[in-house]
Length: 138
Image (cartoon, rainbow, N blue to C red; front, side, top):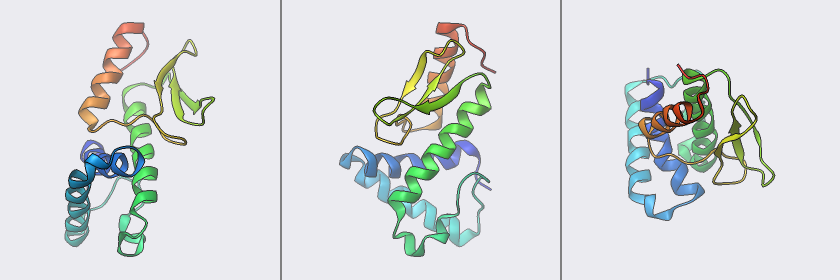
């Protein structure tokens, strides 16, 4: 089974490519190959991520990657802190609020959380914000 961080690291370049940055095309193609190879080996995705094989020939990889990215983003945040909550900001992007209702993250695209290329980068930012604001992180 994929670890949470490994799944995020595979999904992130695909989601970034479709959501914001065509310069990620090569990284996205490589990540899609990892998805296909994992499927051939029968690897299981975390419970909060729909198996990409349920999308015929990955035709809807854009939708799958963005949904999966957000679910993995949420899981990583929840793995590190339980006192932040998410909602949609005024522009329709997803963001987290700290215990004082101040934004922690602001999304980069309508309906999505901000884009991080790796779970390590996201976890580092969560720790950084936790230290800056003295909010609860584990």
